[in-house]
Image (cartoon, rainbow, N blue to C red; front, side, top):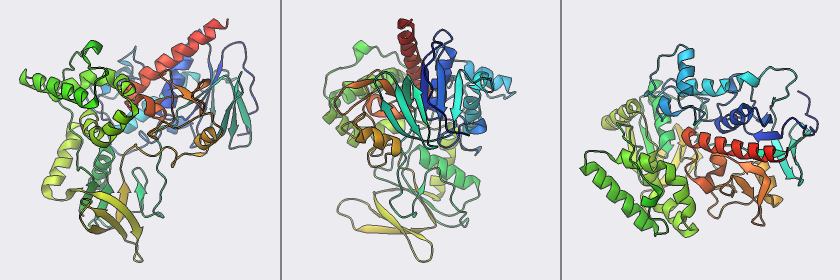
Length: 462
């Protein structure tokens, strides 16, 4: 397509550019376009292409494997917090018989996200929604507007820009020896050994894919603590009031309070899942209330334990993983990964140390997959747009380098410490501030609130 020309905002509604057409971007666009009073016009920009079956899928929902299912029950996967049965109704309309308590295929959910914007697609002229399959290289706040520089050579003028760029993707520093969690590598022999760095959700998906393909070789999952995601089970979320939480107390006291609640719940016949799920609505506020040193301690010591209890796997997936461990095919190895390199024979040599005093251990494998999760150095792995924002002073990284620093209203904070009124970030791109903002139930609430704030700002101008 031709490079878009500058678009001057029209009186019929603010023009909002959303950068990223994965789950966060599509849900954000759906909430904006559903607000008929504000009359928002949306440009959805995605370098990887954002039309047809790719719209809304991103990394999480682009898989076609039937073994990759949602880690959250269908009943909690609506894109709209005020319409919790929206996803289930869509399933029914497609003739799919999944119950709302089931864990449906991720490809099915990707198709659902792709249909969210259907009411605004193919309408000529495209007054409400435009899809632009290009990369945003630069973004500049001009005071009254923002200008986006696109990879096609053109520029786009908007009233607001929202970064919905998803998780930070690690750059390969091993010369191609390590495959990403979602790469599609070349086939290997069925009995060849495989090393997976990490033991979380991505590891589970990779193991399920290997086993479904008939892989017979040993699979070694290497992580520092060797913790596995817990499985879903019956849950009755506890009622946790904000007044119950020990605000302002040291992190150790907060964790002690949570453990005591769990113990009391279990003694009363409940489960730890009840308390974890009851705390979920407060997780972001608790994170923001912690001083930076306490956040750093949590990341070092508490986050791995929180993640395996908070981010669970479906029962069927848990059964397969437990069987693979019992048979010895899947080995969970504790250790610190040191690196990997390609040998002359094409095999991969992975190196790790079991503890600080142990000698290096080397493993020869046909494949090494990096499944260490989403906590990456956001500066070291920044793409062109984030590099531009940081270099121009329009953005800064949070002190722990988890991602861009944003305020409680999702506005991007500049190098001068001031939030931009026109640049925002949502979903995983805002994780440094909100922590628990990687799952659909959290993203949809964030998107709904931001759409309402922007609508109120639009009303105030007229």
